[in-house]
Image (cartoon, rainbow, N blue to C red; front, side, top):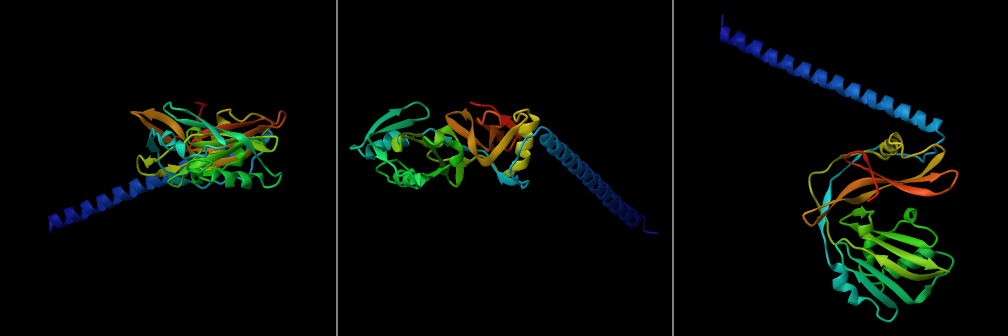
Length: 267
């Protein structure tokens, strides 16, 4: 009898059994975790309904993203001389995050219809706003007198005060704007799975950041500042959530880090 052959057969069988048992345990654990997460989500949904909190349609789809970083830049101070000198009075704060303030010496009168389109036309004129084509209007962040445009960098929407253009309208006329600008950002690591919009709202609720008798108006995904390290600004993908009090009608904007799945406080 070929004992070495028998030993080999038993060894292969043992390894196969070990792999099968390991796979079975992993699958059981996944099923348990999925079942637990589903149970928690169902309970959270029930609690939200019980607390008279209204939600919009929320996607449970996840996606991939990574942290990004960018260096402080002088793009605004280096280029502001290109702006129109006939109708703009410009001042520039040259701290770590440059802020350009432009006041129109003669306010730009706006028609009552299609105000956003009129402002977009103004913004995209390089004589009026530096790098204006890099910004997109975001209604959720503004008001009737404050129109907010956010910067898109390498396909990423930067919903952050360091990459924002805010136009002030008074008495149907554009009177001034403030601008910050990020030049470039680079991915810091490989992309990883981030939480869904629904899970972001549920996380906010569990952290007691959504009170009874309120309404979630909108949910947006973008990048926001996380920290500064060795002269670089680090940004994280995040969910931005607009929450309105049904009694006061005031709206607050909350943020959830989409990677760590934690609530981000104001900075």
